[in-house]
Image (tube, rainbow over all chains, first blue to last red; front, side, top):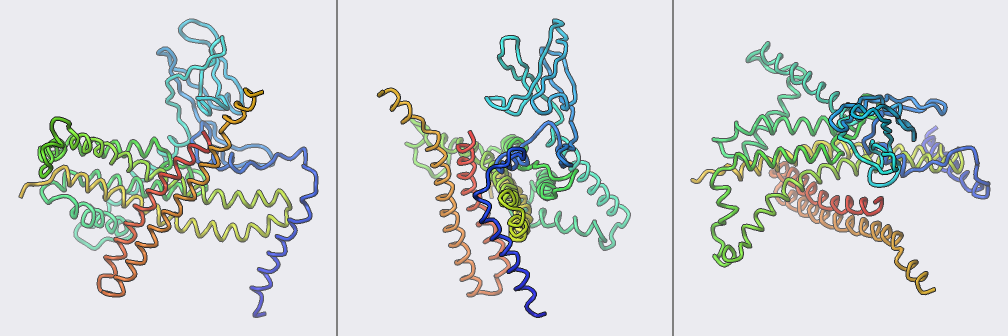
Amino acid sequence: MKNWKYIVSLSFLICLIFTLPNFAKAEDEQKEKFNAGEVILEHILDSYEWHIFTWKGHEVSIYLPCIVFNEGKCYTFSSRNLHENEFYKTVNKTNSEELVFTIPHEGDYKGKIVIVNADGTQKRPFDISITKNVLALFISCALIIILFYLVTKAYQKRGEKAPKGLQSLFEMLIVYVRDDIARKAINEKSVDKYLPYLITVFFFIFINNLLGLIPIFPFGANITGNIATTATLALFTFFITNLFGNKEYYKDIFNTPGVPWFLKYPLPLMPLIETVGCFTKPFVLAVRLFANITAGHIVVLGFISSIFIVAQISVAGGVGMSVFSLILAIFVDCIELLVAYIQAYVFTLLSALYFGMASKEEK
Amino acid sequence: MLQEVARAATDLAPLAKLGAALAASIATIGAAMGISKIGSSALESMARQPEAAGNIQTSMILAAAFVEGVSLFAVVVCLLVAVG
């Protein structure tokens, strides 16, 4: 049967034709309509519970603890109390009145815990709950610590012998960061100061990007696609650049050599431009990582959602669609693997370049 | 009567979503043009000097990542407009 490939693809195409007759059917009242936008946002955004799967209409999820502070007193409770529109009523520890917590579905505080006052207004308390991203960060950091502990133990045991196994994989990447990123961008005298941070940030971003692509629990939370995580990493780079910059660096900002005097006095145009540049560089680092990772997740989720959208019209159409959607989703997932490495590389390279500019030696 | 027409004319939320969708596609056109220029010049220089192919390939991927990053800023802004 030489032509079996043609027969199989033709039969899946015929399955797609089954979508046509069903446009005249009336809407099913009992089944819930599949809202693709909502499903995609649910997988991208942070939440107070970790939804694993839905078994026969019954949701299986892990309800994470909520830790909030109100007027100096700490309240901890499981997010099961707030699941699906419910209110959690407890006693206010300062004045022994009723305190109502809820998660609103619209407004400024959509999706976050608020306190509902007696007159209906909402107040956002100081919230340090363990959300899905926080738990995923704990898991991925534990994984990174275990991996690096094994690598250092291997170096201690094997001494000068050739590396083996996990050690050789990590040695390849660490030597790449040290030689091709750090030593090329920063001058010889100050490389070792910045190297631990560069290696940490490279592996943190790379491993978290990769773990975000695995759909199975305990991985699969969108950590590096959260603007808070990427902004924190960019803030680290910003602080390290500016706290350890030498006098040359600050002279280049406030008194740029080679620029005519009328751009610096009476109107300090050049220092202003340089200072704004100093702030936009880390901001751009944060947004680049966030946008790349989130966009990749949205594309893969969109392909998978398209199966369900077509399956709503007809089940046979869904079967046909799933073949093409899965092929495209696998292709985009391979691109996402490349993007995971490239984004870690670009973040580390740009951080190294900024450190190099901040610690330039006068020849 | 005039107030009703004015109120309907200033309800610009659907127009905002249309603007967001159009802007995202224009940003994609910009990114595609930039990355194709990078790719074509990289291929040309690799054909001229095959020994430097490794270096050129690394620089090409790096430059493509930067150009793609810029287009993703536009996508982020469009997403903010479309859902907010």
